[in-house]
Length: 126
Image 1: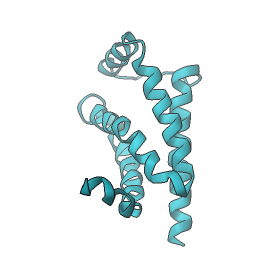
Image 2: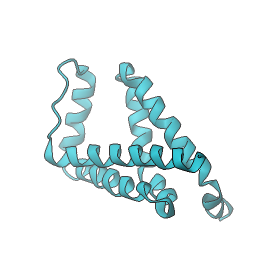
Image 3: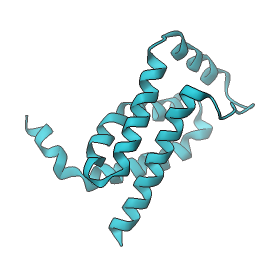
C-alpha cells in the first residue's frame, strides 16, 4: 500500500514539475492578479538573464519525467532539488501566502528522498 501511495505522490509531483517547466516556455497559465510586487520583480530579474529561465524549465521538465519512474526517481530529485530550494525560499521571504502549498510539496519531496536514501549513500561516502 505504501508503494502505491508513494507512486501517486511521485506521479503528482512529477506532473506538477513538468507543468511548471512547460509553462515557462509556453506561458499558458495566467499570472494571478494578486501576485506580490516583489515576486514579479524577482521573476523579471530571472528573465533578464536570458539562459536562466530556460535552464530552470528544463530542470523541472527533466526532473519531473525522471520522478515519474521508480528507477530514476532518486536522480530526478537531485535534478529538481535546487529549483525546489528556490521555490521554498521565495515563499518564505517574498510570498508567504504560498508557503503552505510549498511546505506540502516539500513534504512530498522529503518522502521521496527518504524512500530512496540508500541510493544517495554512495554520494555521501565519496
